Image 1 (cartoon, rainbow, N blue to C red):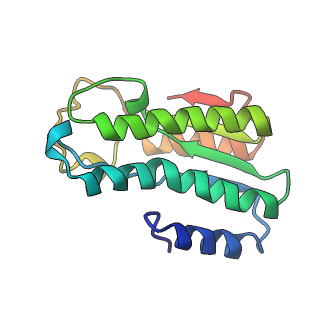
Image 2: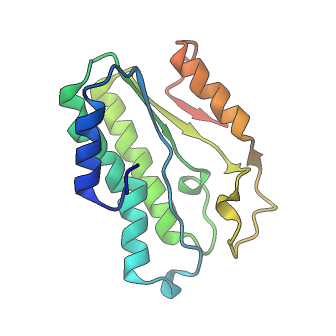
Image 3: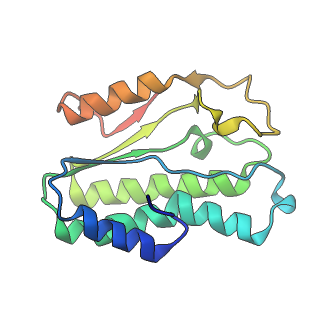
Length: 163
């Protein structure tokens, strides 16, 4: 367990993981406080940036010098960084920034970095949401898992995969 709101916990986790033989890391943590831009607190906004973006950056930065150069990194991103809708400014910003971070990381690390862009994933993530996503296409969790498996098996040529 690791609280991605806590930098030290992330660093401690990378220390533990660096001692294991791991071939792939999948990043899928995310948090979203639903509501209009002006209705969220500074703490909620900061938490979204911390969990959705900053935690990924710290994790990779701390882990890279300690692991094999063959390890793959898979980031499960969000359609929210490509589509605009009301009530998601901070969440969308964090996902947009993550996309550019991963793209830059891919330029440095090559074929070890992947980004999966699902649409609205059929989970409870949007359960307490005030935004109606009926007009948006959905992505089944099994579709995401199939892409992850293809990456692990070396069958995925694309580095950024839209679902």
